[in-house]
Length: 294
Image (cartoon, rainbow, N blue to C red):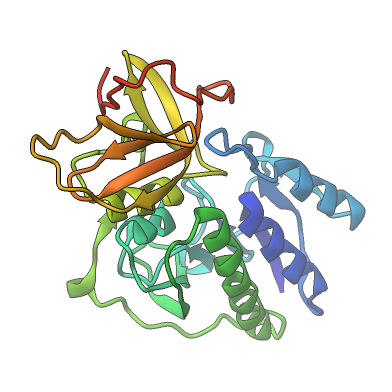
């Protein structure tokens, strides 16, 4: 069967490697694009892999018109694909119908979900509403960083790829079932403001947030004296009884590292940088307050 993968990021790369290993599966060409929201987007690695196997490669804006008889597989794809929806298979980073939409894995980690997973669905005119082909999940424990979670989910992508190959290589589309609409939730796209830490939350929630939006994403942020800073690494610190609790204020400096008051609990920041990756530790002033606005 002829297929065209539309894919991006590390998950797209590992998915493509699995497709290439398959027999009786003809990859007509691959379409990809650069993801400017990631520090490492694997665009060049995807192109290099295609070149090494003599698979035609196109950037999104140069992609040929799709033949109606071709199956499209979309991995980490952000844009509408104009093709027969019944021939489009989408791989999504959540246990659908939960977390339809954007950054589902990040949302799951922020919320402290005990299970994460990936779902293969058919295309639909409304995003992520397509019938479910197959779903795979795994348990996780906290603390966990987004990069670790991506590695875990990437392994699930390989399992999904092998399942799809078992059907597509024989020239048939896999069976599917409708989603349970009553269980649907949505995750919104993120902009710069969505990386700001809300210091009124608990130290546990803040720690999860910092870990969930770290590399390869932009990393959590805050403001000091109207200047945006990036909190790259932090840990929960034992709480104290504070009479006039003000979230965001520095309460202690231990080993030259600031400890910040949260709505409940304390956070020690061990790595703090500006937008150019320059370290901002130790702080210039003990009387420092971290704010979620400038």
